[in-house]
Image (tube, rainbow, N blue to C red; front, side):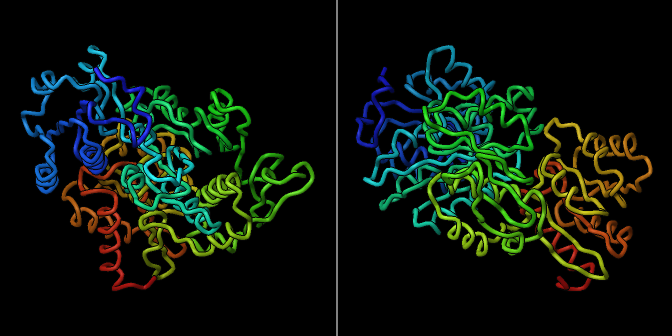
Length: 490
């Protein structure tokens, strides 16, 4: 078998490696395409695959197994005798092929492992900034990317955010920095990398059905801090993230940098009244602070929430670790806009605000939304992914004007509401999917909403039971709202 330890560069001899690419989503295809470019002997295994991607594999000469031929441990894989299996991160480690790989000492990578080895394709060797957390990853990654670019550091957001990291690696001009969003799935499989700066934004129950336990989920997230070179950025308000930094094996000289919504102490970034301040990256941090931005600046991004403030503080801390000046960070904040479906104001009519936070796909994200408003008609439900919603209901029952329950896992939501918030009016949407179920949910919400209320789509659950994805769910909400209130009155 090929010694994988010798493959540490784009310019290594990849032609002798035998690689199985397991899964053909966005990241899986980028892996197959990259390995083909390197000349590696490659076999793609994917039960489900889009026809156009298979056509491209045929053009570039990569063989593939799909459908029933890809199930279990295909004989073709055994005969292929792979040196490595590069797995799409959503595939569970209990899959038969991965169990077979472990039993036969076949190395398993994700695309991040391959990208780290190939990062020297151009002379422009990028620093990596790695970001994970239960919620806020994408916004923080995008903010940090904007801040770095504003500071003259050519940066690209990639990884779990949508653009495969290998596409960024293969950019012919290269980058000074890659801002890499990492999911717990990717981190579970990830080997050894050396990020310049790293962050865990927060930690709460999520994907327990995949990881098997909260401890396993936590341990996966904690891997982001390993081997950090400059700054391990943690959430002062979430002690679990601080403990991860304390336990991490980092490069000598790496600093622990906290971010907080409160007044920052030494080696922290936080808020003094309405000003975001840096007390971490200046010489006299014991006695002074640098002003980065004001709440008025941050408010230009979108609906002001504690969650947004925390994301801005985390991104600013990482940008400061790279030497970006405060005025450049402030400029980036002023021009930044949130992606759709992240606490997005859809419309306002008759004193009621209709807000789309379809991206709140777990209770921790929904908690951030619910905590931002005084009185809420809550549209909730979907696929709960093994997570109990009861504590979320307890935390916010006093602010609930009503709850409109949708989704496949309605029973668990209804039971939690009945047990923990018996005084809250509840309406169950029992049938339909896509635009039909959302139309019914919005009409129901409209019957309960009064002047001063927020109708909040923060489902605390995944969307694939009734919608294509969270964006489809959010778009369906917006269409239904505008239909109900008579056009765009936001």
